[in-house]
Length: 132
Image (tube, rainbow, N blue to C red; front, side, top):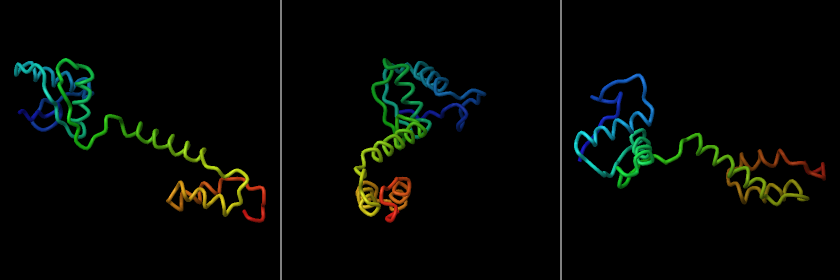
């Protein structure tokens, strides 16, 4: 087992460039220097993303990846996915023709957070203005 510092971390070499491709290439050079053919990589945070990137660039060199506390997608991509799911959930609400009170009850069943439920209900148009 080896514990490898990525470039610009710990005792490793320091470079101006620090892309995941750079670090994947560094990792493969390390494997070559130790005559290691196929390995299982374990990483956390940047190390996990580097391990995943290495596996995608060099699938013949990686048997498996253990990613600790890091998803294989970026945070921005995850937020976009959450936003799209929320929009789909709002669009699926059956509130057409309902009174404000009834719409809020329906929204509340889908969105437990009262702040979100109120924000959604405040952006609806109601036919009966006395209940708005």
